[in-house]
Image (cartoon, rainbow over all chains, first blue to last red):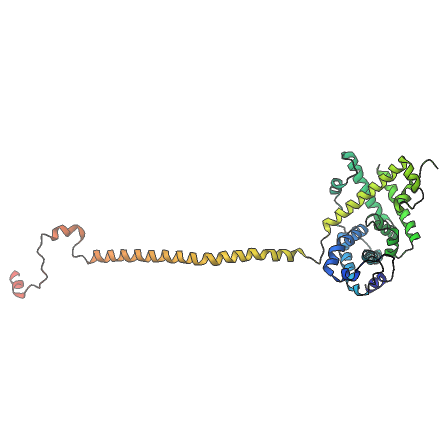
Length: 195
Length: 148
């Protein structure tokens, strides 16, 4: 666990924030600001609400404990997402040793998604197609290799740019691009099957 | 300029943005632009769905709801205790008044009974009592013997 935090401190970025240590030291503020984002990323990565909650909790505790050592070389968000990426990767490794996956009780409510999606058209047919597309992306993202899924989610759910993704994943920017293209190509094929 | 971008090239533009090869073509070709917009729209809907899904489960363990509800119960408990404390003396006062009235009524009834019992003749015979000369002196023994 300590290793995760120390790895998180080792990267550098041209972008800085004004007082990152104060943001990390105030635990209530840290949770209020970052819990929803970390939880969302963990949930999209693991498709399991309980695990996502555990990962988000560990991630923010790591960030808070390592606040004194954070140099502010990067955005706080990028640094926190790096911790989350490492925790999810560690979890994925340990999960491969299991003989079965636990039952997921946090299945997505597709009726709710159907009500929420807005593709600029109010016709039920278009909304149904949009909902099916979301479902196809959700399923496709689960089948992606770990790195491709991580890069894909950081780009299209967390809306991070390629440089930030490279920092958060510890990959080179060119490698990030490659993973992103492959992931998006897989997802695009899934979407085309829905049409 | 080639006719249209391949699906892979469109995906690259969507992934990387304006820096990608083909971005210029996308600005000039309505068909390819609409294809890219469709992909962006699907990805945007995906992001929206994931965010909404996360919000339904996203309850931070650092702010347990039970703690909040426990504190919100305090005003209700205090109000209930105040009502009990205020109502108890009133109830006691009413109850003691009722007991006192009952005791007074009982005493009055007892007095009435005592009075009735202590009367020389029953009430229906009081009219006859006026016809008899009543003396409280003791009769002497002589006259008593004469009578015999």
